[in-house]
Image 1 (cartoon, rainbow, N blue to C red):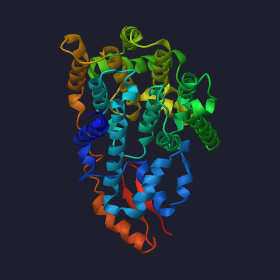
Image 2: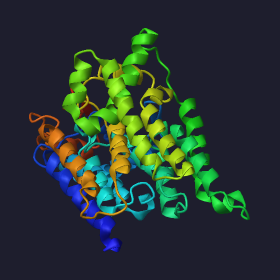
Image 3: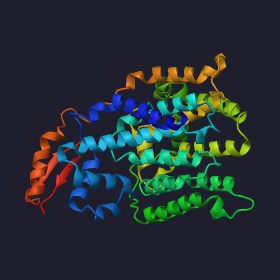
Image 4: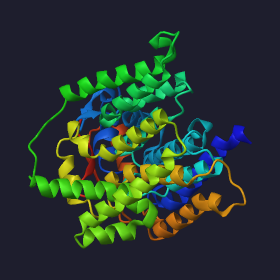
Length: 424
């Protein structure tokens, strides 16, 4: 059964994602913003050169590869469905990673690890993330963080190293994970082995991360900040929002968190979050040796700060974070912290194995409460029911077959984004 646990968990995760976002695969399948205007348009115009183009402060290698494959081999009418299906599968594979025994040091019970994988597919932020290439980098960051979190006794495989390289080339914030991989190298160092033998893949990942960080900074377009905030107000909103999404929302649900923030009580969110955090850490501390506890705390701290430090590669993103911080379900920046919070609580509540003792069923109680709290947001709608990509596909095909002798402009979501094929 262990042999097929990952496959079965992947299928379960995909089923949940399909039930949540099936409208983005069928009749109303459409392109999201950069998927059409940047990735797909560039893939039609210059398939090879597009792979080496930077956008938004960093490279998007995986999204551009997928866009090129779609442009070259998929019928135009089916491209949005192909992209959405690819993203669904990738997310299911990433979520199911938690079922692997490599994470048993953190969550010993396989049942609890299965619960963690399922709950991640129910996390906030997926209304914007799920089914498009533009936000795939957030899921790749999550996978890279999980890769660094795997049992330090287990080496990173060649396949994982290759996937990590592709992910780093698609996610500008991967530089934030350098401390996590460096600490993993520290844990894997051997007494009678050279560093490249004991932690060779980790060294490769760090080197690739450093290289792409340099490339991203070279092609970075700083630009002026749109708004400025008082330091006290900024720090208060930032810390309360992050702690609330990290610790309060996974345990008490999105309504409790949003109501606290909406009515102007960020200090209350901060206080409640820190109280729960101290309780969770006290429970985890009893189960983990210090070196592994430090690894997990470092993992959580990096995810905690990911949105804060994204300005390194995405100038202006901090404004977006502050402006939308109180609406946890509405934007992509709300995914990582609640997802990491799920691991905190399951690590704190999970027993070594399920027994008839009621205390060992706490992960199930947590999962049930979490599912109830998100039931009003289970369904993820299509980008827009009035957007009909299939009706516009014939005009795109005619333009491509005729050598782009006529210009094609197709509205995509959100407005005023468009997909354009210019004159040749």
